[in-house]
Structures are given as structure tokens and as C-alpha cells.
Length: 297
Length: 293
Image (cartoon, rainbow over all chains, first blue to last red; front, side, top):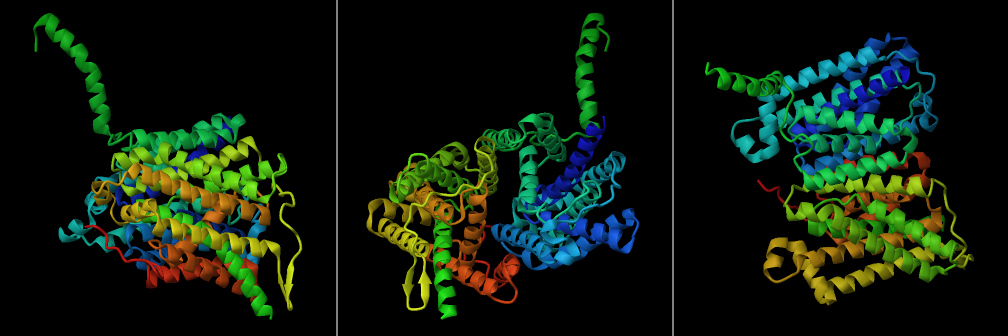
């Protein structure tokens, strides 16, 4: 039982990070390969303030998020003005720089030997609460004016600017939002896995999260959550095939991107309206038979 | 004299980076995306070369040829399986990148799952003595790397500028659609450039495998270096890729021999990369393309 709770916790943490990437890459179309760097900043700030300065852990995680909120505008200010490809490269450079800095300052971070003995504070209920809050916030973001502005920017930046959207300011807001979610995920993860070293949060973590968003469908928040659940939890079930599961995972992704480029769930969103619609669809056939047999409307 | 020695080392490392960066730049020129499956090709061809060198006792040149052909064929296969359909459906560029990344991860773990994560030491297939010119030591490895890179770049230059296929490649790099209208068989051209970039990957895999042992992450790490070098030099141009690689190697050697030490190398590299991107995002020799509205 505890194995499943641990699995759920890890998957939940991944969902938080992926939802952040959804806001940045899915909604706004910015390819950010530096999320790993933000996770690292959030994680190290949280752990170091807790372990060395004795800050209580919820505050420590919040401090981690604050640190990310301070760093991300500094990163974003020069890079968000670049073209799409170069923004990806700049964030990639930032992520690698964070990893390299972490490796260099051995006294502070433990360098390549890592930081061990981090107390475990995260449990499945905290993560579940965080996941719920994150999805709630992002769903509201998507359905609001901010979300529509993001979609406009993704489709055509020049037209969005011409329509009166402050493209740079908006991109900055979304970038900071997504980065702080990554910081939250990083902090939660640090207090869950007792060990941390700068190589955990590398570019492949960021890339994997972007792949998950594209796999689930860039238009669908439900899609990215479902794809994270599927591709993170399912391979754990095949734990005996530890390395093959990644191969299978990659094959899945390539197949979906080739044969169904709109992603697994396309535009579908799970919401009250869609649940009601599904329910009424299944009741509709029963109602139809009733009205046909009795002639009543 | 010490500086000259380090300079020579930097040049040969730069040569290897140049091969990687050029292989990258070729694909970027025509298809406009960063092909992150390049690392997978390097890894697999390195293993192929190692296999024939150690199990079948091939000497250097035949192993190299095997590695290069494996790389070329694998690259063409990857293009057919992963990229062709997206190109035909005119999908956005992002999808190429995401697919290439998945291919890269998949192949790396395939290698890990089937062969295992050991570090394979190549048998001694190159002469081991070093040349001594005055007080400088030039190892055969250095000579080999430098020579191979020079040869490869010269051959590439010849193919691109003196053959029909090269002309077709340059036309496709200019504008895919118009080249097709002019009668260029785009599918053939794309398969050709993937083969060329795969062959270069084979060359890189062999050289790096001999110098540093063969292991599953070999391709990925080499590719990141080459990627950075290509960006520094400018993603759109091949001479830029070479220039960027030399600069990268020089900077790295300078940092390693400086008081900062080897651990500061990635930090300095990426900080410089970031500064460069903000000052001149198209790289040193890159063409500045405007984003389509």
C-alpha cells in the first residue's frame, strides 16, 4: 500500500511541474527547456533554509517558490524577447548553468556528492492538495482572459500585439507562473526523496515535461494531466522492465506525434459541462425509447 | 611553450566539436530544427565501431567505415520513421524537435537495456607513440582527430560545392518549396543529408570512443557540446559551426588551465552562451532571419 502512496506522490509532483509547463509551452507556445533549473532552485532553497537555518518546511517550500519568482524575471527579461528557437536555447543554457553552478559550489550544495539525509515531510495528501490547487488555478487561468491571450500569442504573436495584447508582459507573467510551479514541484520532491544532487534537475527533466505536454495535447489541460498519469504511473507498473519501459514510452510518443499530432486528447477538456454532457448522452437514449413508446414528450 | 601545447590540444578538441556541430548545422540549414536525435546516432555508431574493432578485430580504417555507414543508415531510418510524416503533413517545427528528443531517449535506453551501461575501452588500433616536435608533444590521437576533421570538412566542402547533389542541397537549404518546383527531389535530398550527418556522427563516435571509451551517454554529451558550438557560431552556417567549435574548445581549455579549474568549465561555457544569445542571438556568423509574422 505504501508503495502505491509513494508512487502517487511522485506522479503528483510530476503533474504539478507538467501543469506549469502546460501554461508556458502549451498555452503560450514558449518552448522552455529550463524548468529543471527552476525546480533545482526551488528545491535547494527549500532544503537549505530548512536544514541549515531551521525554517519550518512549509515556509521553506514557499521560500523556494519566492526564490524562483525572483530568478525567473531575471532570466525572462532578456530571453522572452528572443525568437522561439533562441528562447529555447537560452532557457536550456540557463538550466545547464544552474546544474553546473550547483556542481561547483560543493560546500553549499554538496556538489556532485549530493545532499543526503533530507527529512521526509511530503506525503501523498499534501501533494494531492497541491495538485488539486494547481489544476484548479490553471484551469481558471486557461478559461480567463489571460488564457485567451496566451492562445492568441501562441497562434500569431504579431497579430496578438496588433490586437492590443502586451505580448512581452503577458509572456513574462506566464513564464513566472510556470516557473513557480516548477519550484513548488522541486521543493516537494526534495522533501520526499531523501537525497538530492544537482544532476537530478537537468535538461532531460525539462524536455520530458515538454514531451508530456505535447503528448497529451497542447490545447487540453486534462490531456497533459492524463498523459503524465499514463506515462509516469504505467511504466512503474512494469518495473521489472525498468529500462525497456522508457523505450516503450518513447515509441508511444513518436507514434502519437506522428499519427495524431493534436495529442492524445486533442481539444477535450474534463469539466462540469463535459461530464453533464456525457451523462445526458447516456440518458438520452433512454429518454428516446420512453418518448417513442409512450408518445409523451 | 606551455600555451602552445594547450593550443594544440584545444585545436584537436575543437576539431571534434566541429564535426558534431557541422552535422547538426547541416540538418538545421535545410529543415530548420535542432535534430536532437543526433546524439543517438553518435552512440549507436560508436558501439558498432567498437563491436567490429574488438570482436571482429578490424583495424582502424575498416572500423571507422563500419561506424560511419551504421551512423548514416541509422540517421536515414530515423528520418523515415520519425520525421517524414510530420514533414509531409507540414506540421509545426516544434513537433520535429519533440520527436527527435523522444527518439534520442528511446535509443539511449535501448542501448542501456540491451548492451548495458559499461564503459567500453577500444582495443589499441591506432599507433600509440606520440610525436615530439621540439618540446611539444603531439599524440597520435591528436593528429588523428585533427586530420580526420580536416578531411571530413574538405570532403563535405567538395560535395556541397562541386557536385550536383551538393547544389541540390544548397538549393533546398535556401527554400524547400522552390527547390521542389525546380525539379529537385526533396525526399532524396533529405535522405542524403541525413546520411551525411549520420556518417559524420559515425566519425565522431569512433574518435570519441577511442579517446574516451564508449558508453551510452556518449552521444548525448557530445551532442550538447556540438549544439552549443553550433549556436555560438551561428546555427545557419557551416563555417560558423566550425568557428564556434574552435572558440568553444579554446574557451574550455583556457578555463581548465586557469585557476578556476575544470569544474568551472560548464558554468563559464553556459554563461558565455547566455551573454552571446542576448547580444547576438544569431551567433557569430549566423544569418539573421526574421520571424514569420
